[in-house]
Amino acid sequence: MSEKIKQHHLVSRPPIIVITGHIDHGKSTLLDYIRKTNVVDTETGGITQHLSAYEVSIPTPDKSGSGPRPQASGKITFLDTPGHEAFSGMRERGVGAADIAILIVSAEDGVKAQTIEALKTIKEAGVPFIVAINKTDKPSANVEKTKNELAEHEVYLEGYGGDVPYVPISAKTGSGVSELLDMILLVSELKELKTDPAKDGAGIIIESRLDQKRGISATLIVKDGTVKKGDFMVIDGVVSPIRIVETFLGKPIDMAHAGMPFGMAGFSKAPQVGSLFRTYKNKKEAEVSAGSFKNIAPSALRPKILGEEEVKLTKVIPLTLKADTLGTLEALEKEVVKIKTENVVFKIIKKGVGAIGETEIKLALAAKEDSIVIGFNVKCEPKAKDLAEREGVTIALFDIIYKMTEWLENEAKKRKPKVLVEETTGKAKILRCFSREKDRQVVGGRVLEGLIATGETVKILRRDFEIGKGDIIELQTQKIKTRDVGEGKEFGLLVASKVDVAEGDIIEAFRVVEK
Ligand code: GDP
Image (cartoon, rainbow, N blue to C red; front, top):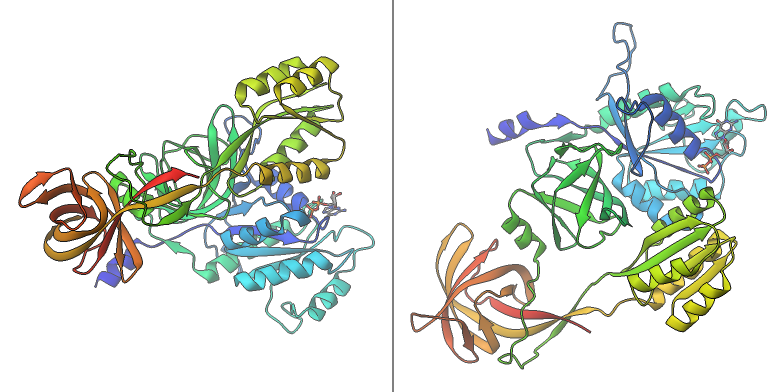
């Protein structure tokens, strides 16, 4: 019966689509066309997409005719992932976030290297795909030849010995695009994308960025459940309160439903693109799930270091960008945002048109000693150069974008931060379990090494594997409340944990230090 009740709550959600294919085959043009024809920003009258994903509403086709296509939902979400060769990793993740892929192939050029690469990614990800044969408006377009080339690469289209749906389109004139959208809805209907809106949210990070006003923000896609303002989000072991939720057009909303892209600000640590998130109504629950670390004040009572484990820490490098035109500046900014080096992010603190002057250097100095000032197609004033040399601010001049990107990636690698290291400060064995009420449990044990203290977060290990974390609420020795217990002593313990502590488990106290 519970199955029935569960079923009852399931509703269809919009499909998440990624467009992939060879460079210049028309990904951006198609994304632009769909955006322009299907996104209506009623408030501003213009479309200002804030995120690298957008949602469109497709008018329901007339179902009175004999063969109209079934309609899963009138909404479709498109991921606007970069199609650049250098970002194939990102493209792969794009497919991971997506439910359906569109493989775009130009009818002029046919199957190319990146078409094959995209196909491989699609197959590895196991997502259904639709072929869009593009540029059919061009006189030199050859749809038949393209189909044959696809067949040579084992893509057998419907009507050509296979079942891969395809639609001939022109992303430029828009011909065939509405058929493509219908096809997406049809495939998504077959895929039965369902969700329970009452469930907590879960999904994937598709973009993360830093800006001066909002701090760290990200674009996320909900794949299941509902993300609600006021709840708590866990990404890569970090808990963030959900305070600001926005649509892809930047409008504040209270909740984001499954299938929706949304923007969120206020992260304490830049989430990694491709990471999964989950939301929780309750902060404690989120913290337990994150296994969040409490920074334990170093204490003289804790000289013993029993073991070490690394924890990641992100370093922010302030960056100033000066360029010859606003357009270039925008392009540079996009490149900077795309740079993903482990544990390092660039934060653009100032950008502008014109030569590098003393102001930029002073600002860079105020931000941090390891600031970088970049000039693109512009000069650096001699006074600024002198000041930078005196104060140790790095200036770099470029006239080719990818050179700047390469240089910055290299700088990021060089400046990778020290890592946070977990040091075990105490170890105890659980000898007896007394009672459990909700997430609290009373147990007894003996300290094997180091020290165990009230207020600490501990790891719970079973046969050497961490099964969860817990918080020490209260400690007792000989039935008397105590702050800490040392090596060899037996104790009673009230621990708060999601996991059930069992006899024989080991609890481990630790602190986090920078190394
Ligand atoms: P991307 O690299 O896959 O994103 O390709 P773009 O969307 O940037 O397209 C590359 C070039 O092909 C641009 O100059 C587009 O204007 C052009 N293009 C894209 N689709 C079509 C189409 O359907 N017809 C024609 N004639 N040109 C197109």
